[in-house]
Image 1 (cartoon, rainbow, N blue to C red):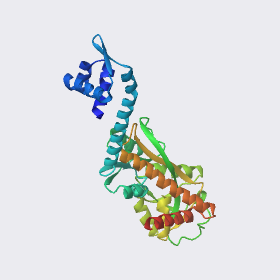
Image 2 (image 1 turned 180 degrees about the horizontal axis):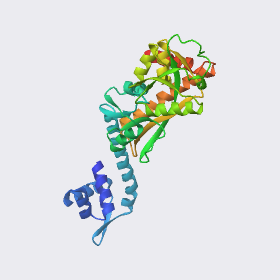
Image 3 (image 1 turned 180 degrees about the vertical axis):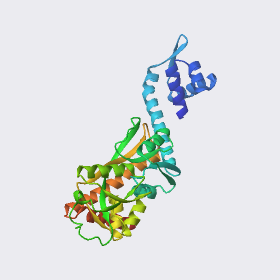
Image 4 (image 1 turned 60 degrees about the vertical axis):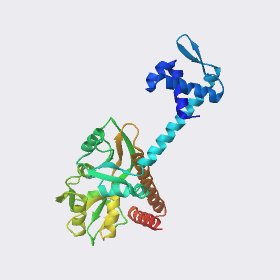
Length: 326
């Protein structure tokens, strides 16, 4: 039995005759009639009887309708699965980020995906704001966007990933602070700060918390990006608020990193257009979420053992790197 015979059979059922079914299938009426007769010979049962100008399924034909539909659905599902498998072998995904998210952080979260699918290229494009990023995603220029929340994009689907913590990163050798004790932001008046001129949402979040503490920050440098902030910190010129992942890297380079009271944090995640993602993009969303969830669970486990946030993060990073190397 050929799949096309079942397809032709269902077309005749749905269009109540060979002529209309043949037009819908774009085949000759004679070819369709021959296919139905061949199917009836194979099954050794008549599948239709004529009533006027229409064909109506016989009782045997009625019994065949649902099994035939199931077979065709299963065949389509197989094709979809195989197409998805092909799309996960080669291709590319354009991903929008913003300064607050940092392209290197997105690359770290996507590491599992790139290891599993080395034939898929990730094209990271940084946008100046969440609004600009959402516009590019809505227009289809980017398939996925990594952004802090909230966003004003009713037409986009949002996927919550985690909460971004900002820690105070101070130059190596800084005295008068205890890394084991959260730094009171009310004492930040005399701390020289370097800020990223492009990270508007991050600056707004920090400014909002400082206003609550009645603190006027002493900004000594405005630089293009976070890496420039970190360079100033490591060279002793200023302190900076940096996300947890970058703060941990700074600590390994000798910086003094402290949590703050109150905390500075923002939720973040992914935005994409409504509807089904390509298999590659869907896998990236799932695997990025899995990577972040695992990382945060490790940190929480080490904190439960009595470690401070920074030390727990460093231990979690060490464990993940050791696992990848093994």
